[in-house]
Image (spheres, rainbow, N blue to C red):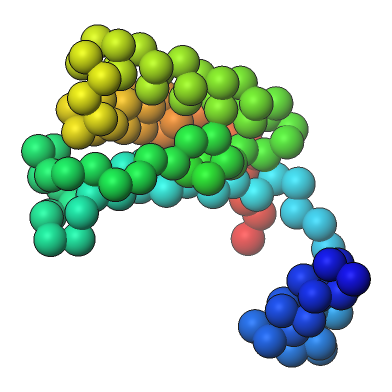
Length: 125
């Protein structure tokens, strides 16, 4: 019954035809996704203001995904957690300082991993 409710809720967002088209479509194992920011700041503050109050942080696949062929998804997610914990400890658990520091550190590594993915698996036109 719960599964049927979820299915019905999804059909309010997309038509049944669109859902079937998605299911019939080819799988794309080389897809990657990268967010330009991992920290959401309070809307009354500028997103690029490192002093702004932080509201949320993206970790793992929420902020970045890699091609399965690269075998880095789980590793990157665990590294996210490690770096976030290190930044919290280094900044006396002040989230408003630790989150921007986490974001700055991880964006560099994630961009490097995405560049590796682009080089290893160039997209055909």
